[in-house]
Image (tube, rainbow, N blue to C red):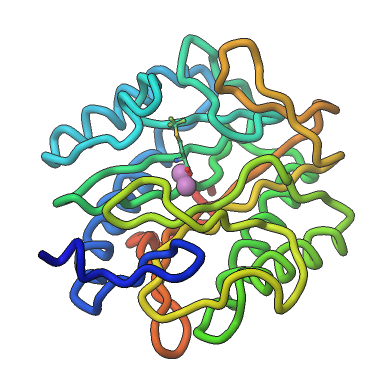
Length: 269
Ligand code: MF3
Ligand code: CO
Ligand code: CO
């Protein structure tokens, strides 16, 4: 049985086989296509529930399963996090206003493989400072990804992200992290978006995980609202997030959730 043959590292990180990359590639492509389709929906006057309804229908139309509906009691096909919401924003009657920035985070299951990705969107045109925050957050993710290759460590990823973000006088959220995934939604390790070079587990070919930095214009502290999901910045400063699912290869990594339309960073314009 292949489940029992799978190698797990000392830190509990599963090492997947070459053939498993195909499963993640398809799950990643599906979620990226769905996020591509969300671009035109995000505009002033639309509610986050309407966007979620579209995502739910699209997941169904494709014959896929939403990983978030029913997850720990969560009832929606996406998380939609506006302005000072850091993550896990619950879709609802909230109407998007001109200049709002929002993260849409979708996870689908395709033939048992989990594809998890999120991007930023803008209703109308974003204020300059918000656009800079999104640019820095995307660049932080890509710098983290650039640190991924066998022999490097998870600390190298966090270090690359943190040093870049803090040099821009923005802050990295500590209260939420990326995660291993594959045939499960959340698995070891916790992928921290801050840290020290050379620390943490060593990266090996066949590890699958997300990198999903949340960056704030103000201070890094967050709090979770009474709904038990919505995380916001304590100082009410703007927050942004980008997330890719990736797999470590012999020489670096493969990004499973690249946008087929080339609209990952800039879903707007
Ligand atoms: N997709 C989120 C992540 O990046 C998790 C959302 S869980 C939910 O890990 F229940 F809030 F949807
Ligand atoms: Co994730
Ligand atoms: Co996600």
